[in-house]
Length: 113
Image 1 (cartoon, rainbow, N blue to C red):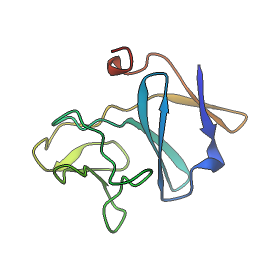
Image 2 (image 1 turned 180 degrees about the horizontal axis):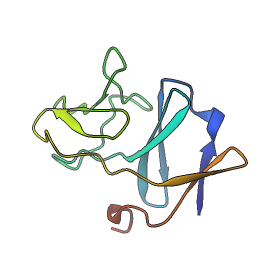
Image 3 (image 1 turned 90 degrees about the vertical axis):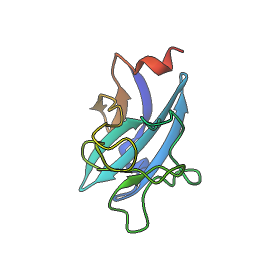
Image 4 (image 1 turned 135 degrees about the horizontal axis):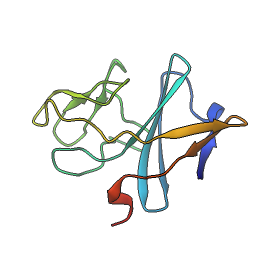
């Protein structure tokens, strides 16, 4: 397992980006629940953020692709608006161990490339 961060390193209702082991990760905390996704738009394969740690739309209700504006739901990463509608962000599985977010195997295949 790979340690991502302490659960308190992600603020409620906010996102944070991480780069580790060849993988770019979006971490989001919503209502105390952590969601992890690969930072990769399914449309063009580009990173999503506008600026470091800035992955959400204006009213913080969706993850938004900075390249073409696609909107992804927070709780499952499904694209509900944009050229990749119906596709989803790649979820990353994790476990909590002593309040540390630990990535579990297997990691998305793009981390190996």
